Image 1 (cartoon, one colour):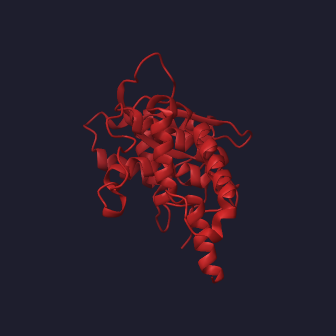
Image 2: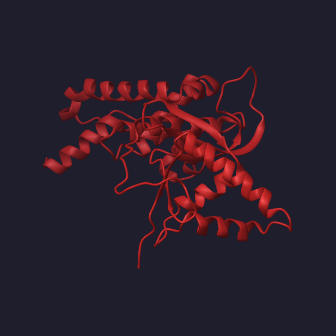
Length: 263
């Protein structure tokens, strides 16, 4: 057995749905159990509310399918656990492929309508908790229309259909919105708040790759051109956006602006 074949066999041993039958790998059976138990325990912590909503047996079975179909591609456990929610969303479609029809019952099949959003929210919190947030190169200034917005690098914009960010006594209401999930520079706690619609749209535009990056003034002009406010409505909308930007700076979602690229 070559080294590459041995490596593939070890991956198969650790993450395949069934234990490999090769006698040469039998001594690694305990290693397989340790790997899977460790990852499953972390998933139960990361998706605590989803596990409670959907049931531990269904979640554990889905996680086993996740490991088998999408074995870890990253050495970072945070990335492995964070990828489970996306797999669960796609699981219904995945079950239509011939190699996967031996599995029955996708996790979100027949689940409460808020389950998808809850999984996505818990995944975002998990990723943000350990995401690197390096300080930007170069000087930052206070937010103004002539500079390029610098967003908190840990920020995730999460488009949700249900208000799942806080546990409640009953099912959350259907309430489409964008949630800002992030960490402040001065602590490790994951924070979130609901973004006003104008701010959410602006942040999506600011996050999109552009060469050269647009200034805040350019983004606002593009935003208002897209929305085409009625006569007399532009000024109130601009005031609303300015207030939302102020809150985003206070909450450390926006770190300031940098000078636009010259030339």
